Length: 453
Image (cartoon, rainbow, N blue to C red; front, top):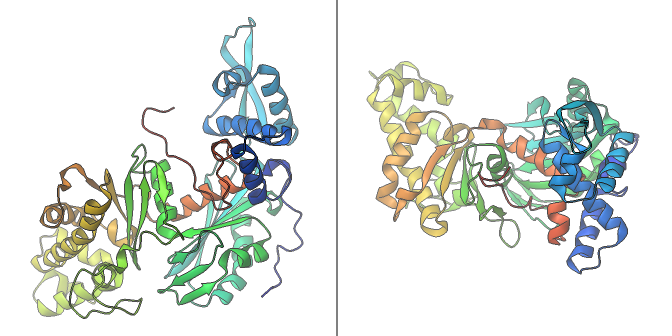
């Protein structure tokens, strides 16, 4: 299934930026295996040390060599040699001096990461649209290109090189610096093979997404479920930052959950965990995209909400909701609800109760600290959050300790999460190497707590 790509003739990504010279995924796996068996060779130890230093530099605006040595526990000569290599490869650059003198009696030179030294690609295969984003070496998204969703995976990948070229041009980052790709899809993804087993709302089934993306883009690729990817972003940078056990609940074109337990994403044996949208909440014969009926997604997806709003507008011709009909987007529904319209508020109350039923499964089974509502429905307005919070005690046992909040990252959560995962497979993290995690599909490690620097 090979296809020509306008990236085929690109020079390979810098070996220095891949932390060891070989493909990112295999480098991580080999170093992890060596660490887990207690046989860490010289090359692997250099990778660990380099990764420690690079992680520290990336995590700060500026930092000195003595401070790197103090925080990393490495000797000053080791840090100096690593920094020299990073500067030679233009990954790190020197700035001015520290304000105060160090132990040697003079101010130390400050270092910063060169954000232009690397680029990372994020691809979101959504039901309504495909998003392609390019981030710089710090993970800051510089450009986002949007196109119509393609329900045929072959056509979707055939269109990708042009979108990538456009995103790179807008970001002003050259293709040669593209290190790795993170892709997300609304469906079941086998974490071992990168196979998209089933994406019912896209019509994809048993498609080798990771291998085809690697063939097309000629870069290391990590593929995950959209909700799991968004949960990673929310735990690192969003509303769940510092929370060790939470669920990111996507409510949009479909419904699904990204689960984080004790600071680590939980994906299940094959990576299929979190398909909350396909749990039955009603005996009503309302069809679901998967072919069954009565599922949470049948009542709480964007399509279902719009249909419910349109029915309410038809049944209440004198309502504010009816005046805004036809209801083709969520904004008229929430606008009518804010104005006090009874028909609109009844729709939201019923929706909030259905969402609360789904959340109650999470509360009763997982006992998370927090549930984050995301997606176009989940973040549409505070009125919905109020209805969910009010209805939850009717369906869940002991829900009072569980906070239900809306995502602070909005509709970019999955894009951001894919950037973070792409950065991880491109630069083997010392957290993975030292822990001996040998899977080529990254787990991203534990999330920081509020007390950690």
